[in-house]
Length: 267
Image (cartoon, rainbow, N blue to C red; front, side):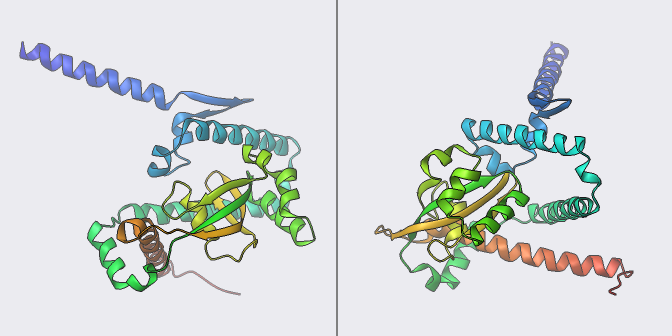
């Protein structure tokens, strides 16, 4: 009887494992001979980002992968990547991805406790005694940094932000002028709040993510009247600590690597 129970457990684990493996290898999209599978798609996001991703957002990002892959395949057909300048850009981009992945690996081992968050709040309490601001954000989304830089250049010589939205933006918000409403530091779109909070009104800033690039500006601001304290500022405190730790990891890692690799020369 015990053997039968043990066999049942082993079989159940095997079935669950197979089911998970099948789900991870499921195809989500295809362009020519290239496939986007669930496992590769999930790897584009952090665990937190993936858990908070809605079905509609997933569809949007899959469509972006299809569009990007179409353009990349056409670039390959035209042998654009054989141009020396393009080769250098690809190589540099690859180095940045690898370096960021290395830093992320180190950061993943660092945990920020509730006590550490509260101690930071207590020490820097003066920073958190201002009314919380909300910003009405207008944005342009494009799939790659080169396109984003081209848009910034066009706007620097006279193209309006509104016109750039209609000409270039690659998301559904385009139909509404690129406006995403008011964003706050504690809301689901807090990433955009942090991107514009230090900007001047209507000043354009570039925000890059693992899924593409956003050109952002805020056109209106307002203060909230609700009581704010540690809980409301917790997300910002965590972000500040993460930034400090990221900088420390970067500094320590460079020092470690330079000590291990003495063959570095500047000409």
